[in-house]
Image 1 (tube, rainbow, N blue to C red):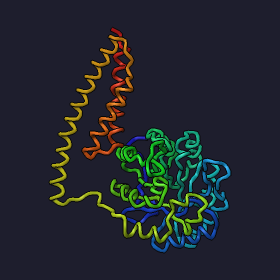
Image 2 (image 1 turned 120 degrees about the vertical axis):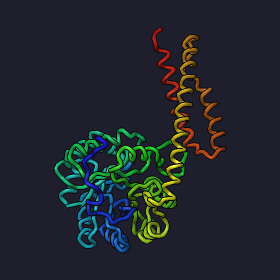
Image 3 (image 1 turned 90 degrees about the vertical axis):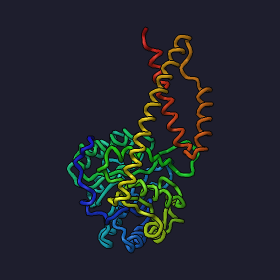
Image 4 (image 1 turned 135 degrees about the vertical axis):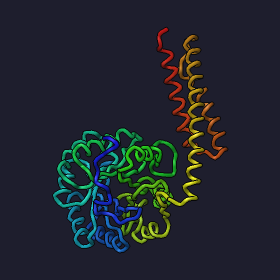
Length: 365
């Protein structure tokens, strides 16, 4: 997939009202016709135009509620007819795609577990070939940007021109307040490479709890993402899946209409342009200095590698590294830098240092 993807702009899909954010909302799972219609009515009342509901639910353990299956697609058809809403659901294989196309769904999305499986992604791409249905692709469970891009490539090569992404965070073993690690840096990297892709955030799955929806939604808007996919249920307290992270329609109306601040993408005001350009010039100078310092640091790493080679010493010295990293985290957090940023930055620096020393070790005299 090249940076010059031949995509149809999201403004031409006929799905969303502008300006930002574009919103996709609805329950985690379709549970009953009554639940679907009551939730859709509540969302339609304040202008939500795109309704989501899981029909097939990939669950970790067998015996959990795994969705109502294809019969729920008829409920989504009723939402289309009675409320004029666009409807969408998650697909995880060719059969799901065929069922959605047969029932006239307006859009599909691909979940995190499926995005990480190239075989399934190719199967879905083949099933969608020749259609013009929009497709949104969630990030894979692991923070693997190439795997995410690879899934997009398969769909693009199948002729999908209404293509977008949903960022829902990544599984992690770290102790964090959220259900998934937001991993915003990976989303930013994808955004930088492919700015033409419509970009949604899924704060429901990212946070795993409705109490985090505002802060995560706001972060998505502050980063300039176009839209949000948020789970909403008429009675979340009795939801059969992900009850803790769903909002009632009225609560979602308040979140979107009264709490989230949507910022402009840019400004042509003279004072803004003058000051922002100067600040960016200052950053350019600092970045040049950082590159020079990193080069100097790696030169020293190469010399360390030469000493280790001369004295037959192993490259990895984990006690030394653990001590150094702990010191960096203590000093860095006192300056206001986040521990996550420092840990990521210095682990990357250490990895490059190890690579250079390994290169020295295996270089013949």
